[in-house]
Length: 152
Image (tube, rainbow, N blue to C red; front, top):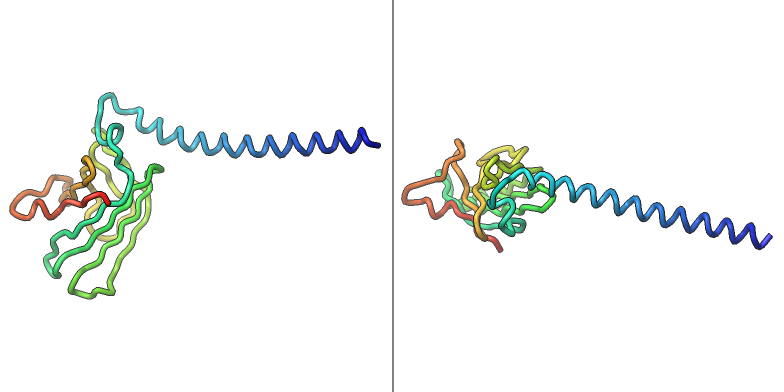
């Protein structure tokens, strides 16, 4: 009788350890996908060389309001959250989008997926990102410095 109980306890313990092991393997494979995606680049770039994940904040120019307060959070699992607040127009009008983003072939520009309105491309640099125009080009001119979001 005692041998049967001991045997059942041993089986239960092995099943528990096996379940924990499978959970770890699943997490590791998710991390490997991100690492594999980063391995596509052959040289140093923003995607592979910078500590790009984190929250960036700034106020970008607006044609019909005082400015657009923008907060963009980039996560290592290639997801983002962007919150925009149109200042002076309707301070209660705050928009939030979440989704995934992709790196371009150079590993320096990200494109936000599922953005309802507004820009979707940003150039990633050391502790800052630049909002790009609708064609994906750097914004130039007098207000160019106002299109930079700084890491917090």
